[in-house]
Image (cartoon, rainbow, N blue to C red):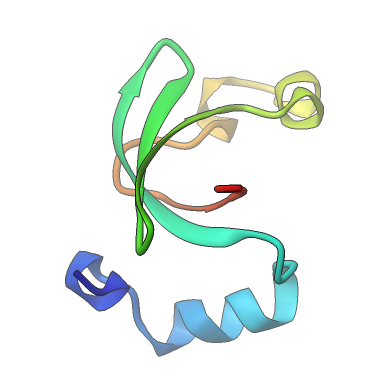
Length: 76
């Protein structure tokens, strides 16, 4: 599987290069349940959750990821 199979494109790659640290992988949220997520990456599927900073700075539920969103995730 390639990220392109999930809809990854050149615009997202450019954003990644400019905005996201090399220590993160890119993945797509495929499942959401009570602020816990399954994220599909090139390395496989991973469980994820919202970081403390994002949780406390979010103004509403709309600030959290939803199924179909691209996210940066640490897989190691």
